[in-house]
Image 1 (cartoon, rainbow, N blue to C red):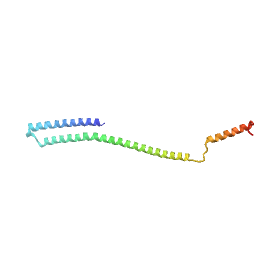
Image 2 (image 1 turned 180 degrees about the vertical axis):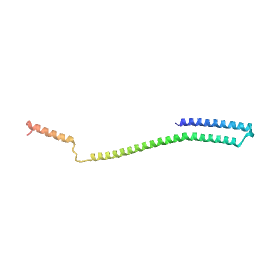
Image 3 (image 1 turned 90 degrees about the horizontal axis):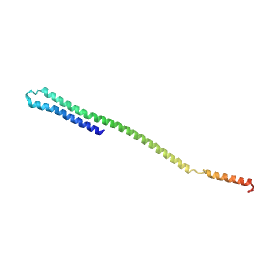
Image 4 (image 1 turned 90 degrees about the vertical axis):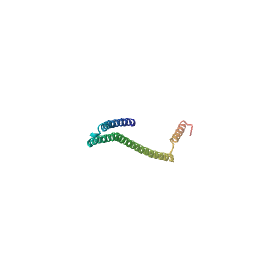
Length: 139
């Protein structure tokens, strides 16, 4: 985008130089060739043409830069909003992560919980005892 703007600026500068030359060459030749025909109306016309060229040059330079800056500003605003949203999501994620760690620590430190393997071994021992008693090995 910046490269395109520089190309446009160079084209605008060239067009301004050509315009000034187109104004200055006839003016200088008119002043040199017939200075007695110079009237205030002629000077006013040349001045208005020069002022018009100056205003056109300023307008042609400011308008593309203004459009570029406006577009850039809108893009930056969108990026800032995206960053804010991602930061909010990170804060929520970190908050949930902390809550999950607290719950995990509470579950780790919980006493009185029986391991299911112990219950399985106790049931297996009872069944073995009943089996041995039913076949007559144990009284």
